Image: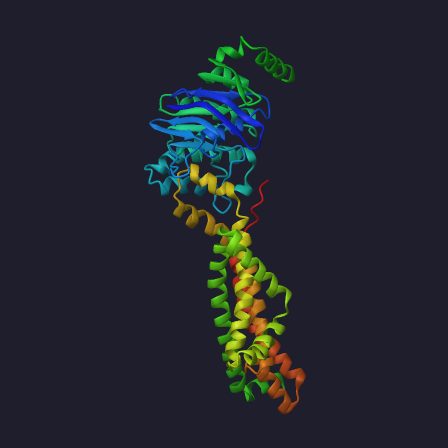
Amino acid sequence: MLEVRNLNFSYTDKPLLKNINLKLTPDGITALIGPSGCGKTTLLRCMALLDMPQSGEIQVDDQVFRYPWAENVIFTPPWPKLTTVFQQLFLWPHLTLRENILLPVRRRHIADTNGELDALIDAFDMGSFIDNYPNEASLGQRQRVALARAVMLKPRYLLLDEITSALDVEQIAKILTYLKSLRGQNIGIFIITHLLGFARHASDQVIFMVNGEIEESGGPDILKTPKTERLFNFLSVIAAAS
Amino acid sequence: MTVLNILITYHMAFLQGLRVTMELCLVIWTTGIILGITLGVVGANAPHSWGRFTRAMSFAFSAIPTLVVLFWLHYPAQAVFNVVIDPFYTASLTLSLVNIFGVGEMVRQAVRDFPRQYIIAGRVCGLSSRDLVTHIQLPILFRQLIPGLMVQQVGMLHATLFASLISVEEIFRVSQRINSTIYRPVEIYTALAFFFLAVCLPINLAAAYLKRRYTRDFSER
């Protein structure tokens, strides 16, 4: 179980996250949607235990992280059981894409890397560029590699920040089909996305965020029949744009 | 007398000068790289104490000409403290200090500016602190630092010529003494130029190899 309780976060006096409460669907997909700058990535970074909120709790299975964090308590985040794919990807530039995927897997002594990597290379169409360096690959190719790097670590919780932003329609379909196929493998996926179609058809839970607050959440049907005016307007704007 | 004739006739003197130059380089390069890297890493991790110290000393050594420091340590400092130190040690100390703080500042800046996102990516992938240092930080820093470090060491080799001015019998001083005997400046300084080419060429080739092998343009499309 990954649960966020009463989370508040700010960099300055202006709060960026206000009293956030959410529970990740275990073994399912939770989609986070909302306008740019509403705090989606900040929330993901807090959930990934990379930023320290001012108050609240984050529970990852039996580990509870209570904030403000006591200075004398050692911070031991459960990485890579809880892992993240960042929007900026952060692939290591001195390693090939294949090495980027294999380094953490090998250092963590995770077995059967070759067979699983080959399957991922096929699933993500990475065969033609897997031995290139990150700067020799396009953003879309790097996005697939970053996702593969995270998946290979067999995480319990996978947090994804707009990982399909640079992919073409065909690649998006492949990645999303793959994510859907992870159902039943005991992985809780949290994905920030602008793809309402994906949120509607693949997710088990949808959260809509505005100005650092959760405005509305529920099953994917909230995207068909929104309860709040803000979500209705947001969906209308996106529908008009597309 | 041709360049070759001079080299053959005075080969013992040249070899002796070469030995002293190489000894100087050995001291300067070893201390500069070991202590400089240590100082740089410590300076980056303790920016308000060692970091400031490294920055200040590096600035001082880059602002004050090496020759001034060398002369100051050779003449007034020894007079003030009433000691007589072998010029070889004075030159070694001066040039080592220049190299230590030059390398230290280079390393401090590289460590300080190391992109944090690569560390964060490693952490969420479950890499240990040791893995992060050995597999991520060191290889990237090594690649960034190679060209600058090589240039700095070649510069220090050239700076050993200053030691001749406080009577260290290194290759330049040997060349000057031979020139004062046979007065063939063109041939002698040409021979000296060839010597520096011969010593610098392997260093430059090694630098080029390391650069080709390990440093690449990291910028992403």
